[in-house]
Length: 178
Image 1: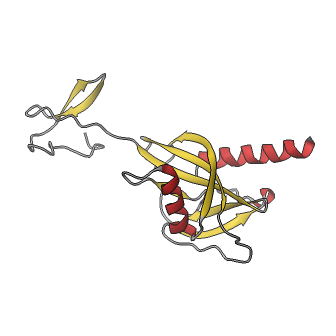
Image 2: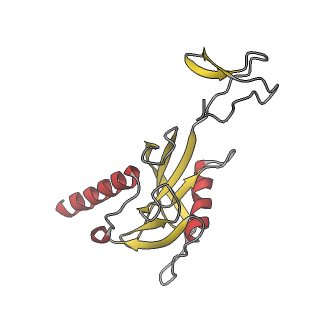
Image 3: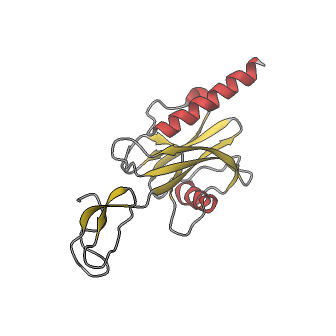
């Protein structure tokens, strides 16, 4: 029971026991009946393209510290995904964005990543004219930059980033062949 949030009931302080409830084994309080439901984490990432270049950030924290990824982060309780992504973009790179559409939903996975959640990937564009304005690196970002398809770094942090990049490059190649 070391990967759960509660060892003792948050209502009556009785030690929780693992029992089957609602089709799964869950921590249950034998005294008051409290059932601990482990809610999934939800993260958002932005696939932001401007002038045929993609915005990537270098992570300043684990997991995948020092590797490149799409900007984003965890949603807060009560926050909608679009608001969370706009907040994360301002926090990480100081950029306001317009969200175009949901691209994909990925499971959280990888070394050092809590796999009990999902990542919502959105296509977005800068909300304002940004030519000549440097990107800022804040929060859990050590560096940020715009990358042309042939300039993408090799050391990418997450499968979601690799998958979205491959789809973007395929779309570009197929559009050029048409």
